[in-house]
Length: 165
Image (cartoon, rainbow, N blue to C red; front, side, top):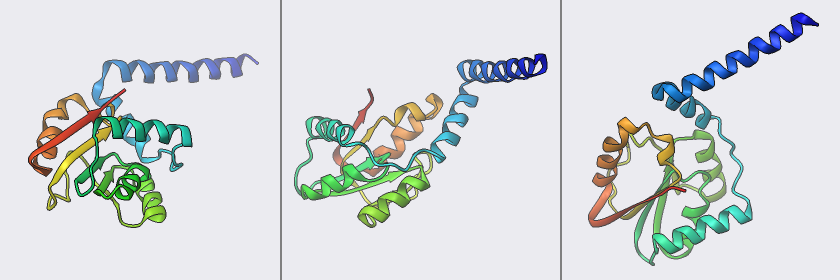
C-alpha cells in the first residue's frame, strides 16, 4: 500500500516538474506543443464550432469571389472548402500530417503540409492570408521569421489577418 502511494506521489511529482519546466522554459514548452500537435485529433469541428469559425472569418477577413486566400493552420480543411464554395481561390496548409490527410480525403487537394518557419510552397501569391488560433503554437523568438515568410506570400497590397482568441 505504501509503495503504491509512493509511486503515485513520484509520478505526480514528475508531472508537476514537467509542468513547471513548461512554464519557465519556453523551448521545452514549444517542443512539447509541437509534439502534441503532430498527434492532434483528426476530428472535424463540431457544427457549433464550425459556425463560430465561419462567422469570424466572414466578419474579419471578408472573403470575396475571385480572391486568392491562404489559410495557415487549416486543420481538416472545412474553412478552405467553405471559401471555395464562395468562389474564392482558396488553399490551406497545416503542420499536422494527420489533419492534412483528413482534409485531402474529404475535399481533395485543397490543403498542403507545410511549416511556417520553412514554407516550401512559395510560388503562389495571395490577396489575403489568415491564421486562426495558430500564434499560440509559435515560439515568440520565431514571430519575425514567420511574419517575413507570410509577407513573401502576399501580393502587393495583400492583407494578413492573425485571429487569436
